[in-house]
Image (cartoon, rainbow, N blue to C red; front, side, top):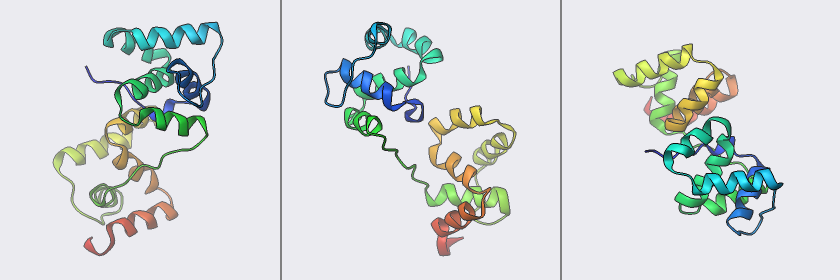
Length: 161
C-alpha cells in the first residue's frame, strides 16, 4: 500500500505536534485529543492510516514523512518554521503544458494528453490530488494561465521548443 504524503496539507501546527511525538527539536505538544490522535496514527496499520487520512490528511502526511522519508523530520521542522518547498518543473512538463494550452512546446504522449485533458475538467480539489503523483505537471498547468507563469514555462523550455 502506498504511503499517503501530501506536504501541502501539513500545517505548521501539525508539523510541531508530530515533531513533539517523535521527540524532535521544534516540536510542541498539542492537547490531549491531538496527542492521542498523532499517537494512534503513528501506530496504525496502513489500512487504518488510510482511513485517518480521509479526515486528518495533514497529520497522516506528517507522520508518514517522519516515519518513512529520509530527511522527513527536517522537512517537518522547516514546515513548522513556516518554510515552503518549491516544486521543480521539468523541461518536459513545461513543454507538454505549453503545447496543450498554447500549441507551443512539444507534443505530449497519449497518456499525458489525456491527463492534461482531465485537468481541464477537474476542480481544484482534484488537481490537488493529481499533484501528489504529478507535481511538476500540475504546477506547470496552473502557471500557464498567467502571463508571468507563461513566461516562466517558456524560459524552462528555452531554445528546445
